[in-house]
Image 1 (cartoon, rainbow, N blue to C red):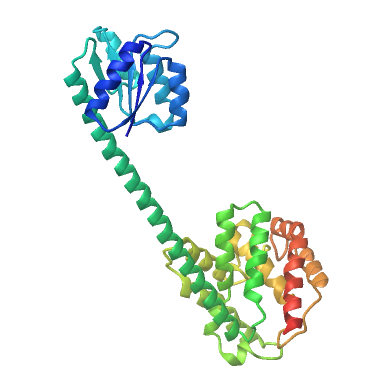
Image 2 (cartoon, rainbow, N blue to C red; image 1 turned 90 degrees about the vertical axis):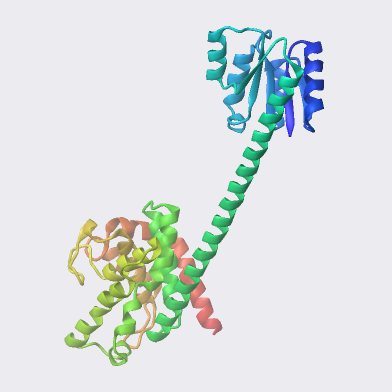
Length: 348
């Protein structure tokens, strides 16, 4: 515990200091000038302050007001030492933040008792604050651990989906990265961009409910087969429905609506424009772009420049124009993502 005594009288300063020292094991600092005391209290955290009421330049009430204005001294006990018994003076001091009063001439035993009691309360307060801080850190650590586990499950599940779909080329990873860039480009918050990044890999989770014969068919799907293939969005939404976390709720929106079109010609609900969840609008571009750039059993991979042109050409029909603008603005970074994917493929 550290105690600060502020009194413009050298003899009073010495007397109060000796009395307080005899009653506690606290470290004691004394200041004759209130401005010096304010400077020192800014550098040192005191646990108790005793301040004289009548001082030149700044009286005890003004000093108390200045000290209480600092967050670190909102709860620190302050004892006003005063010879003024006027009721208005005491009310003024209380309003400024004085915790207790000691009257001049003071009784040393009374002063020691008041100081000891307030320091005991302060010690409990500090211990409680330390405990609260420790609990806060523990909660943060536990939350981070849970989030890390949630992310790990997402990526492992996404990897399983890729194997199920017959594609181990990192499609879901690229869709996640590109989606995050587009989300940032339209001004979504970093937290929301991160959520979209983690939810995007589950956009095709419903494909686990589609028959292998349709999912891996090398040729063009028949109208009936395509109708069945479309059911993957509904299956995906059902798998993810009722999630308790923002991540799973976002993944459900994306799984359900990433095949909707800006002009209303998509599926399954024929939503249009802003009625399509923005998360799904973002992922729709990333998904189509990377699908165009990827080899499939039924098609060759497109050059990225041709795929880029296709995304731009579909602005306002298939895709949200604002999301397409963000896609174009982030193109250098998207090129880097696709280039890295090509280098990995060559290395394999």
